[in-house]
Image 1: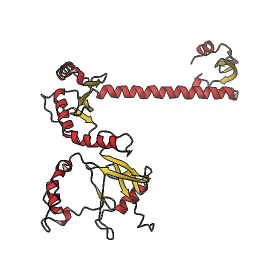
Image 2: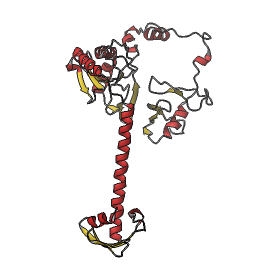
Image 3: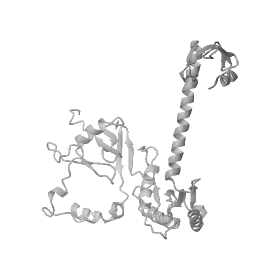
Image 4: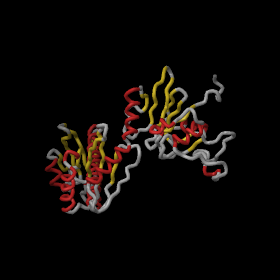
Length: 343
């Protein structure tokens, strides 16, 4: 800052010597006048000057300096982020937009729930046979339809998309409808539970939730896990009390139980995912993760100690809730009061 600009900005600040290295007078900050004395070095650089003023003015100047530096840092970070975005984000070619509009028209605008402002993400809606509405989010690549889109939906099982360069949004929607149809019975069961029972957890179950904790009575609740891929419900009519339990299990589950010695014992003896051993004294891993996609086995004692050590651990009566150490989904176990010496 030159001498003339300093005087123009602060007309009440006047030089005190011929070299104009000492200024004394008043400056206005926030509509208040403050006395200040400025001593400049021989090169007249203001950044190396020394200031003498009251403590109120020092506090105001420090606050304004901090705010100025903060604004500069914010603007600099935004500028860097914008440059990085421009460097790595390649705009789609014109045919991308024309193809996308064509695909939406072929699918039907009534099936479009949302589209992002940059036309990179669309959300499609569909109804299953029971009238439930479902959404699927489709993240399109810049080389659409040559590149496979990324799809996500609130489903209890993974949605695996079959895609080719000739595919379009209509193919995604039809595959999504087929997935909804395969899960119809599962959601019918879950909706019946939600409507006819008092569900304690989760409080607001999503379509992907397979677990329900149901109130039974005073201080009593039942925790159930429904496998959407299980055919048990459709085969329950095959249970015949005139036959043995083993025969009925084979009929209902549609499986053949392995005979002794027909397979290696190691195929069934999975180690505990916490202590990494099969036997813990006389116990074997008899607890598994609630998420069927994980299914990691644990010793009941190991899982209980693990869940109790988590900051997010919750306990309802003798049921302990926490996160699985492998998939971070909800995992539960029980606390055996009889082992602890309680009656």
